[in-house]
Amino acid sequence: MGVRLNFYGGAGMVTGSCFQIEHGRGGFLVDCGMFQGTKTVRELNYGVFPFQPAAIDFVLLTHAHIDHSGLLPKLSRRGFERTIHATAPTVDLLSFMLPDSGHIQESEVERLNRRNRRRGRPPVEPIYTRKDAEDLMRRIEGHAYERWFEPGPGVRARFWNAGHILGSASIEVRVDDDGGPVHLLFSGDLGPDEKVFHLEPDAPAGFDYLVCESTYGDRDRADATVEERRRALCREINNALAAGGNLLIPAFAVERTQELLHDIGVLMAERQIKGVPVFLDSPLANNATQVFARHAAALEDIALDESELFRNPSFRFVESVEESKSINRITAGAIIIAASGMCEAGRIRHHLKSNLWRTKATVLFVGYQAPGTLGRLILDGEKTVRMFGEEIAVKARIRQIGNYSAHADQKELVAWVVERLPVRGGIFLTHGEDEAREALRLQLIEAGCDRSLVHLPKLDDGFDLVAAAPAPRKERISDSEIVRDWHNDYALLLLELPRRLEALPDDRARRALLRRLHAELPE
Ligand SMILES: [Zn+2]
Image (cartoon, rainbow, N blue to C red):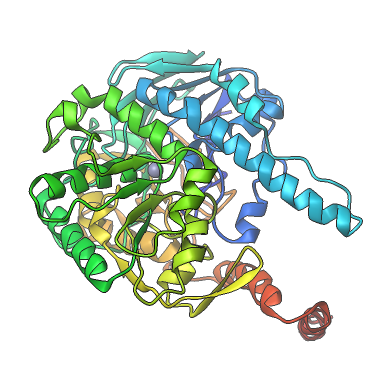
C-alpha cells in the first residue's frame, strides 16, 4: 500500500500536533496533542479522532508539552491499548502533567454541567479524567537519546536532542516498504541555539522526508546571548517594581518557569534586583521544578551552583488554594509567576483579576500567545476582558520579552533544515500559523531548497510517501493559493464568528446576525 503521512493536528496552527503514518504492516502516531486557542479550535478536542484508535500500533512522542501529549489519555479511553515511546525525562514530566490535565478536564466539565443542568441540557463527559491519565502512565516507555529501537514490525526509530525543553526530541524513523525503506525526520519543537539548560538541537542529515515546525518561521530575534536576555529581564523587573505594583508573569509550567527562576536567582545573587518575594503559584510548575532539580546534572549553561538551583530565600513555592488566595492581598512589590502561559486556565487568571485593573501593576509575557486566547487579547491591547463572568478593565502595564522563547527563530529553523539536507522527497512545514510557515517556506527556497519540495499541509491533508524518488503530486496548488486561499478566509470566518456572536448583547441580536448571513448565501 506504500507509506502515507496524514496531518491530523499542528497543520496551519501551532497546537494539536498529531501526525499519522500508515504503512503496509500497520500504522502509528507521532504526538497526540491537545488543541488550544479559540473555542472552535478547542472543540476539536471533544470530537472523534479521524482514525481508529484501536488500530494504532504505537505512539512516538516528541516531548511533554500538552499541545503534543495532551490527547494521549483520550486516545486510550477510545480504544488504544499499546505502548507510547518517549525519552526518559519526558516520562518523568508526563507522570504529573497528564494527571493534572485530566484534573483540569474534569473540573471544566463539572462547571459546564452545572450550567447545563440549569439550562435543562444533558450533561457532557470530560475528554478524560485524572484516572485515565494515571492508568496511561503504565504504558509509556522511556528511551535514551540516539539509540535505535523497534516500536513495531517494520519500523525503527531513535530520538535526537531538540533543545526545546527537558526531554524534548526530534524523532528519526525508518519505515520498511516494498519500494525500500522510507526515512523520515520529525523535528518536534526545536529550541533556540542560545538557551540555558539545553544544547542546541542535533540530528543526522539525508532523509526522504522532513517534517519541521515553524512556530517562529516569520520572526528573527535580535541575536541575544543568555546574558543579554537576562539583562532584558532585569530591566523589566526593575521597571515593574519602580512602577509601584506587582509583576505578573504568565508562564508555562515546564521549562519557561524554571528558566525564569534560574535567571531571577542569578540576578538576585548579583544584586541586580532586590530580594523581593517571588511566588511560584503553580503546583504543576513546582513538580516540574523538582524534575529539573533531579536532572540538574544533565542541564547546560547553569550560572548557579547546582545545589543552589531553584533554592533561594525569596522564592515561595505555593501549593494550597488558600495560600494562593492570600497573595491577592499583596498589591505591590511581588513577582508572581503562574500558569497557564496563555492565561486560559490555572491560577494566573485569579492574579490577573486582582491586578489587571491596577495602573501600577505589570503583566510581562514571555511566551507564544495563540490567537483567541486571553493572553493574546491582553497583549493585542484589549481595553477590557471578560473573566469569571465579569468585565475587567485592562489598565496595567503590558510588556513582552521575545527572547525567552523555547523555540528556534527563522534563521535557526532555516539553519536546522539546511543541516539536514539532502532531503529527497519533501519538507512539510507544520506547527505554525500560515504567515509564519509561508515566510519560512520562502526563506528555505532562498537557502537552496527546491521549491517543489516544500509543502504546507492543511489540517487532515494526507500525502503518499515513497523512498528516494517522489511520485508526481496530483494535488499541487498554485503559489498564490499557498499564501492565501478561500480555505483561509473560511477558517478565519469560522474562527471569528463565534467570538463576534459571543460579543453581541443577547441571543436576539445573535439570531438576527445569523439570519442576515444566511440570507447572503446563494440558492
Ligand atoms: Zn513544545
